Length: 257
Image (cartoon, rainbow, N blue to C red; front, side, top):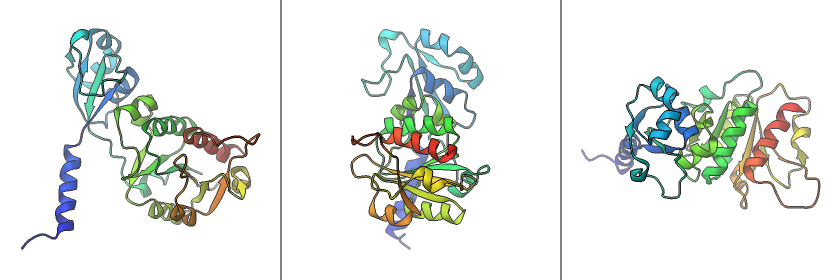
């Protein structure tokens, strides 16, 4: 019996995921991946200078690096990437299910990203999320930045420690968090209240902040699904914040007011 097209497509997708690898580059990203026992590591290429700087991390990983003369160091990454003489081929991380990761400690915080595709923005958001104690950053499988070397380098090691989940449907993820007791707030310049006002007296509740891409902002479906639209007050009548800055400020405001 011939398999339905959707079954074939699903099986092909799973096979593609199993084959998927990425190349991390730069000393910080490579060092932290080498030290991450949950990261599946495949190939390590270093210059002698980078090998010396990564000596402890390489030893901890148990890997045998391919040591390459700097003049012949041509790893399979974008030519403009600043690799600092170290690249590492890895499998993407699997952080598990949203419901398991986001159960978290008392009053957890989560950041959700609605079509934020720039890996540098997502990398910066992961750094802020780690520093400020968010239990997860959540994007979508399509129309969001996947794990890449550029994202990992901008995250400066946070990608190895900060859960970064990619879900099939953002509205479903929002509803799942709401069912878990989260107050889900969408950041929007036209929001009726500030983040501080929305969480006033409710800091002990789980809170999720949803941020949209610069320009388009939140999609209409997202705006309809969140509990409230909130804003970050500006000191003057100037332009909006970069999405990574907004994520950091919003997360801090949800924690400290």
